[in-house]
Length: 359
Image (cartoon, rainbow, N blue to C red; front, top):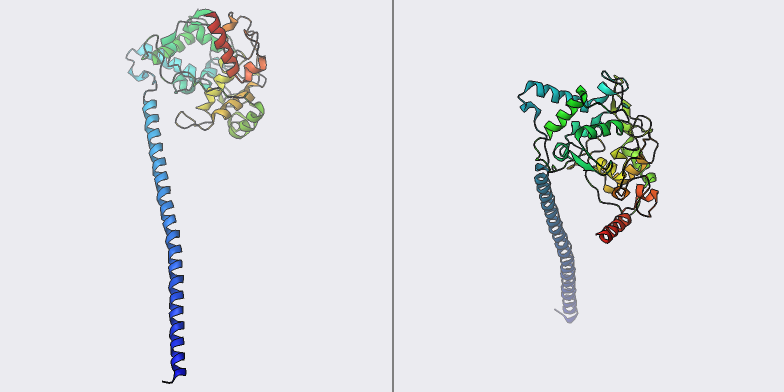
């Protein structure tokens, strides 16, 4: 082989080696890039899986805690266990009066026409038995008791008539009337499983934390129109049942709603009430509103017109008034508007300071 051909062969061999080397380097780079890509993806997947597993674990733990908490909630004494037929009949009538008050005592009532057409059940859900639904769990166990609103010791008869005159914007029943006795019998019986002087778990209304701001009726209106108006209507007048004797969904303001002396007219009471009960289907383990939404909806509803009641005899000791009582006079320097909508923390702080000075 002459030198020229030999040079060509050597050059060709060198080129091939360079090409192989180049291909090897490129392959290594691509392989490295693929390794880094898939490694990061796999790592991210495992990390995400770990987060999901942690989240599932936390959710399961919360669910167990919630179930354990709810297992301790008050449950009414079972009416079916009553062996005295006379007592059972009276208690069952009392339950029906609570659930369908207007059918007996409303504008078209069969017994009397002394209330606005709402039922006790509209404020005391499931005939006063729902956890955090303004139930009667602690009523029998805690009455008679001193109430700062009247400045007197009140019994159950007075308590029932307070609801008749305020929440139902009506007239009181006499102590010896059949309907009064039946409602008292029902309230006493379902709460008879709570020791005297003790409060039942999840009784009454849930106490929401105060906001750091005032509750906002404007925000509340937007929320109300979205979440509440389908049942209570845009005008807040509710929906009457077909028989026109009671409301399927009660009015929240206007002439047929509760008056300004009712407990639910206090914004904290109404906010706590709707938090775990509204919209329809909400419950303690299935809330549909945030705390802020509950406060704002309450601010909107409580800012609208409703019947008025003479409250001049309420709170003889004004220092005992709740922070969110919407009417003066007050024992502090905060405005009526702030007492109605908040923010309540400054009022609470000043009240604590004054109590310390007095003690």
